[in-house]
Length: 140
Image 1 (cartoon, rainbow, N blue to C red):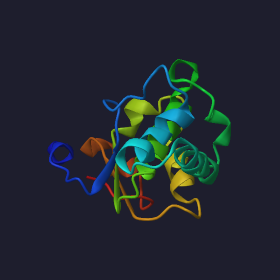
Image 2 (image 1 turned 90 degrees about the horizontal axis):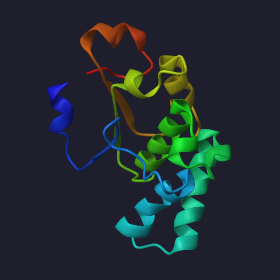
Image 3 (image 1 turned 45 degrees about the horizontal axis):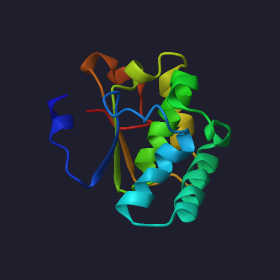
């Protein structure tokens, strides 16, 4: 678990302590990344954000704000926000703390199996949870 704090800038992260902006929709939360980090215009940033939600198979969450989302929907929004960074490594920090409404190892496997997903996906979790992830993703 100590390794999560020392991650480099080449890593995108999904974590409980990286919240969504409650006053923005899922789409807007995701679109903020290309808007401010890559200086794209609003329409292009929104297009990219919607494309990622489409690729994940969760386009329906686009208009939802954080308080209106289920934990699984909130996780997908955070995941999309991390994926739009287009970094080669994705770290999911303690998914059970975020995905308490779905069987999360299977849920993460389904998301990672989408055609557009690439790069290395890793899960950082407590050592006693390692057996939950089997061979689908790497553990800490």
